[in-house]
Length: 244
Image (cartoon, rainbow, N blue to C red; front, side, top):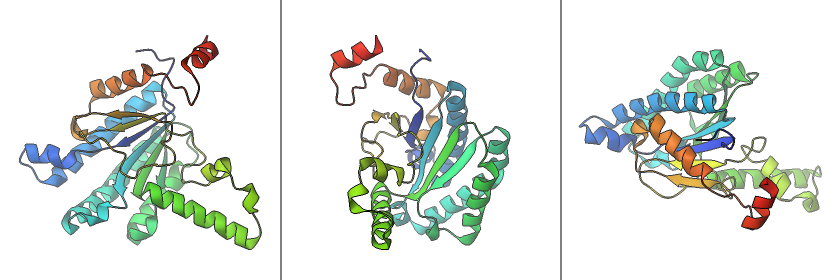
C-alpha cells in the first residue's frame, strides 16, 4: 500500500460490540469493553500512518433509546476510559475533542471531558474527536440557530451566509472534512453521523464486528480508499490531468 495518498481524516461508526459479545455468550458490556481495546489499536495505526484526525461515533443522540441498563453501563465505561486513557493520550501528543450536546451527561462526566480537552488542547499530534450525544441533524440545526441569533443581534447579515460560513460553524468546522468513512458490523448507512461533512467522503462498509477490526482490516479499508478516484464533480480526465 502506498503511503503517498492516505486520508487526512477518518470517521468511524464502531458497530457490532453487542453482537460480538452475544456470539461469545457474554454480556453486551463485555463487547463494549473489547471495543475500547480496538479504539486504542486503530488510533495507534492512524497516528503511525500520519492521519491527522480520527473521529469516532461513540454515542448517538438516538442511543438514549437503548435499555437504561445498557446506557448506564456505556456512561460508566466512558467515564472509566476517560480517567484511564487521557494521561496516555497526552503523553503521546494526542489532542482530544468532544463534539455533541454535553448537557445530557452528568456533571461529573462533563467535568472529565472538559479537563481532558484542557489537558490536551496544545498537543500537536493526531486529533481524536469523540462524537457523543451527537447527531448530524442536531449539528445542522444547532448551527442554523447560532447563525440566526447573530442575524437577530445585527452582527451578521443574511446575505453573508453561504456554504463556507455554515461549514465553519459546524461542530468540526475548523477541521478537514472526512476523506474516509468506515462502518463496521455489516450495516450500510451513515445513521445521522456527520451528515453535512460526509457529502464527498469515500464510504467503506465491512461485516467485521468492531472488536475484531484489527490491523489487517484497517489496512484493507485504506487500500480500498487508495483505489478510488476522487473527482469532486470533475471528470476523470480532469483529475488525471491535474495529478499528472
